Length: 186
Image (cartoon, rainbow, N blue to C red; front, side, top):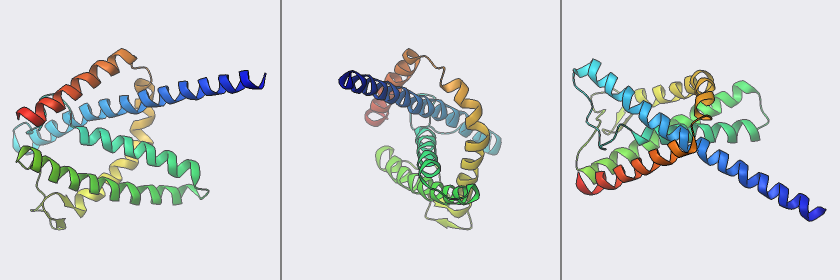
């Protein structure tokens, strides 16, 4: 009987891991596409032109990675720290602001190295640190994280959990193919 319970528990853990994997994958894909839409709308309003995307498809992976990191950090901080909620929010704000700023910095240098082009430049901002990060934008990322976690995520979780696995797999294949073509053909 002990071994049967152990096998059932292991199967439940595997099933939960697969569900978590699709949850993170769907968040990545959904917000990478939403980031592309956001960037294009913002660029269209500010300059009258669409953004110069380093990829062929309608996605900006940096947004997908950012969301996954926010979800992971939220689970880590909120599940493991035994402190008051407002303290968790402050820790989350600071940690996400720092991590997303580092991702933006590394992403800026990587895209410039790979594509020989800068896709954003913050040198005209007062508190910039080079062309890829600035205090103003970092604080926006931290604030956007809190809005995301407390307003957007509860709404999108209902939708994201219902995305069929075959759609996730098709989008994953498309985005991987796009990455390969973008890195070698652009």
